[in-house]
Image 1 (spheres, rainbow, N blue to C red):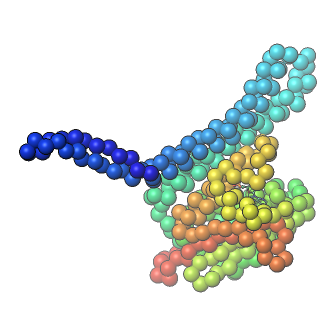
Image 2: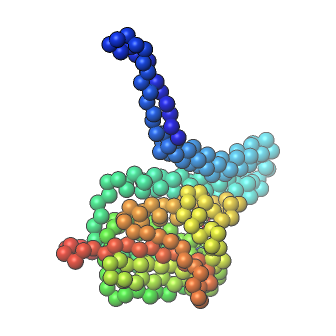
Length: 268
Ligand code: ADP
């Protein structure tokens, strides 16, 4: 897209001339469009639960139940909607933070093993409620990678969280890591419904959800994988979905992070 502006002037001989300036505003337009989309999506994500909070609260005001107990169903829905909004806002802030941090992030060598163990440990209680187990296939060493602690933990949490969310009762989540010389490739695989090829790259876009209709207090806004992608990119790595190999039943997310150079002193 080009924006044209012109300034008329008279040269030394008194001849009227025109300076024409062409501005290439493609990039600006694109980021404006991106912002518009973001605001529209964010408003939609927040407005839906807000409408339900308003509706239920108005109903309770107009028809106060005799006993508080009779209002429990409505109040539960109000609380769920408020929880959903809370989580959506946290996700938006996490995304904004990861986008902002990309510009100034100082990468350091850190242990993939420590962050992975922390994340799995955090999810075990929730997984156990549905008899879901983790099967770990990782090398013996620390799996040192270049990154930043909170970000790496965030990526593991998000992927494992989704794996638990979509796993069937009694399912097994396979967590693997492989050293390919220059980088470490981590993967999280579940036995849930999986993701069809049609959606496999789109799920990393902001606000993209395969099933759009779930507003259930889980805070599912389609931002989790967008945040993962941003963080992994900030670390100089890449993330992808690859759930179509032989023997793969559900979703399988992989990401690759660079290993520190040999000479870098490691601190775990
Ligand atoms: P959300 O914050 O809504 O969970 P994500 O960005 O983490 O969003 O995921 C985007 C969409 O990708 C989800 O709404 C879901 O449709 C799909 N998805 C993510 N992980 C899995 C998985 N392990 N199995 C099946 N579908 C998944």
